[in-house]
Image 1 (cartoon, rainbow, N blue to C red):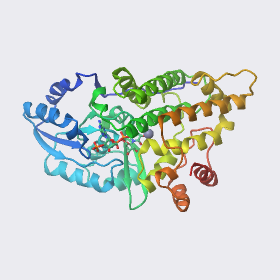
Image 2 (image 1 turned 135 degrees about the vertical axis):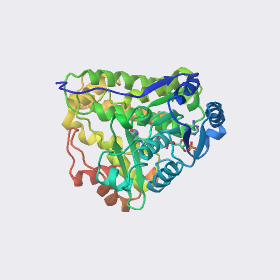
Image 3 (image 1 turned 90 degrees about the horizontal axis):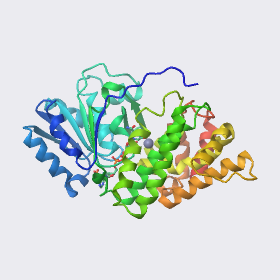
Image 4 (image 1 turned 45 degrees about the vertical axis):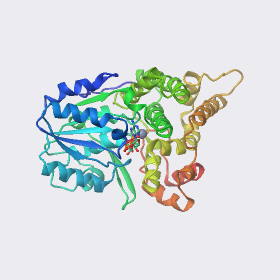
Amino acid sequence: MLGNFTYHNPTKLYFGENSLEYLNDELKNYGKNVQLIYGGGSIKKNGIYDSIVEILKANGKNIIEDAGVMPNPTVEKLREGVKTARENKVDLLLAVGGGSCCDYAKAVSVSVNCDDDPWEKYYIRFEEPDCEIIPVGCILTMAGTGSEMNGGAVITNHEQKLKIGHVFGDEVMPKFSILNPKFTMSLPKRQMVAGIYDIFNHICEQYFSGDDDNTSDYLAEALMKSVIKSSLIAIENPDDYEARSNIMWTATWALNTLISRGKDTDWMVHMLGQAAGAYTDATHGMTLAAVSLPYYRYIMPYGLHKFVRFAKEVWNVDTNGKTDEEIALAGLEAMKGWMQKLGVALSLSELGATSDMLEGIADATIILDGGYKVLTREEVVKILKESL
Ligand code: NZQ
Ligand code: ZN
């Protein structure tokens, strides 16, 4: 049953190859001091940085540079960004990059006017912000996380070997996000496919939960089919604008709260992947790919009906003469074939994990209860061993 829920997403989106122009309009809504957040320099190589700086200057803004946000942003970088924002009395946090920059901007936004240490407050005690939040805007250069239209902010603490996400509410979601598919075209293939798998898995995490006739699941199937089709075009021809724009738009809708309405949602692939990420610092989408097949094979008997539906609706599996179990397994085989075509990681060892890390990764795995099987710690270890 769909049940009772609220749906509200306050992020305004500007999509398409001319979308950066709208930054001019948006900047009028905020004060003078703009913290320009970006990563390791890709935006300087592909020219996006120059275009943005030109717009900021034309609108009379003071630019406060905040470069070097690393993939899987760290708690140390977060504390540094908070200090920069405080010292410069920042009015807008403008993130230019992928999920790491957008997540980091949100984590800074809730911490600038708050006395507590952000890691302790938001990632250990999971408190909600009780201080003034600095507005965030995103200019996306990598499609995958959905961070451009959600409240998620994942931070890594290498010292404690933890990678934790806090999903904040509406007031922390970006005020606006600019999505130009052309900006994603300079992504190396490895990053593009990691993002594609991340999108697909976000949909799976919401789909493999419950067994009702839920509109959210029909939407999920349509999004899965779109990203599969476009990904196969994009790996052959990365400059195909239609495919790249479909991938970007699917990423946004895969994780902007729409398809989780009326669902418990699973998120165990992310819990396993994030724990592995805390140990290896590997690319997010790759960690998910490495644990997915062992996890789904393990839980399949507990949600057989849904895995049969997945095989039929998403992968067009020929059901003739097959038992339900055979159909479900054929669906997962088809998914594996697609993952191999993309070239995503199919094992944790490819990402630098070793067997002596597994107990620690299991300890860092948060066990959630929205999927078809609430795992025990022993089952987590078993799945991790199979993923190695
Ligand atoms: O740092 P630069 O030089 O910009 O390079 C980046 C980075 O090395 C590069 N890149 C991005 N756009 C590019 C480009 N290179 C060339 N051309 C471009 N146009 O790509 C690399 C990866 O970027 P990153 O932002 O780290 O990737 P992604 O978007 O996958 O974000 C990953 C982070 O988001 C979190 C992950 O855990 C991870 O920390 N997530 C956030 C979520 C959310 N907010 O809801 C949900 C996700 O499940 C995920 O956990
Ligand atoms: Zn993800």
